[in-house]
Length: 151
Image (cartoon, rainbow, N blue to C red):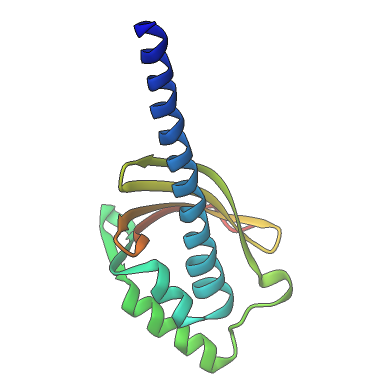
């Protein structure tokens, strides 16, 4: 009888952890879709950007010679506002950005999401975003990427 109880307890604990991870996975996908794809890339919606990006976010950009440049979210938002002013946002037609999630790895309050980044139907990047879970939810804290050669 003790063995059956122990097995049931283990199944309940494992099941609740799986449910929590699926909930976190859905939240992470939603944050990336809303804040990054819609807010930053397609619409230029600062409110959506601020909701999902941590103020300390940095994108790490590889440079020639093995150097890297850090691009903080405040500079990216400034560039986004300029695109709005210049009429380059919101995007439309074959310039719309979409993504396809490949993997989300979560350990408690830390996660990494890997996804393909499309401009129209063309695969342009594979992005890797790091996120932390704070009291107010998951926040994107950094990004690295691979850029496919332009056709």
